[in-house]
Image 1 (tube, rainbow, N blue to C red):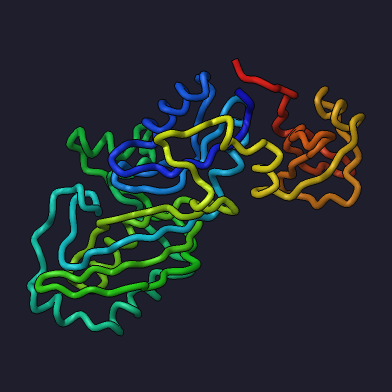
Image 2 (image 1 turned 180 degrees about the vertical axis):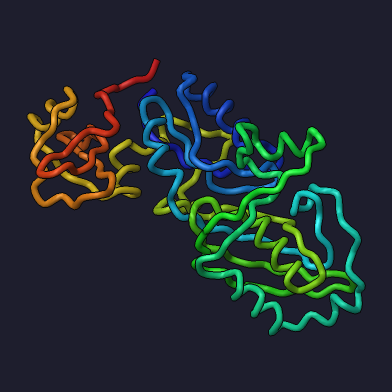
Length: 298
């Protein structure tokens, strides 16, 4: 099976690891990983690396993301989504009194660079253990806030019911942003509680969900993106000749030319092969991740 990157549209009700396990069987290799977990409740884009391209995932996981989500205002939950134990609901009169302008102001306050406390059932590690494992073990978990960027928090549709409001939203954000936490914090700011009822990831960097394959009937060989194609979408590139490809393959440095400094760069060689991820050191390019010329994965 050729090495490369797969775009998969994860269905609801299974874990990201379930998708990896399925693709391992389909691809006939254990060397499959993913960039960016989706909760079982969520659907949408997963990026999977197959074969030697698993090492490319490190450069994909930090790309910005886009989501479509539904936020329910009226009560919160223990997990900040529909799968958690609900808290006491807000008074229906208080929910009805939430004005459109207050919702807009609350969303604006959660846009731009913000300090966000991840959900207590997130995958963030606390003293070496995932937060959700500590919560399931009955521990109280308080996570430190982290700086994230919400570049777009757009209301697409608002639906009012007797005891709740549903907001369909689009979120463009930096890696590490928790959409559940946006729902929680918006509900708290409005004084009525909030949680997430639906989540779909529609983009990771330059990879749109429209190009993703359904898991059922997936043909890995047909849908896999070459390492060079995937790298071009995520990183600046430099084209190298055959001798430079050999040199980088042996761990040697090559002249940097006008390649910019302080960022990983994909070095693309003859036959459109991703040879290495490199970085500039002085007037030379140094390998930080090599990609041997492999046609198949064991």
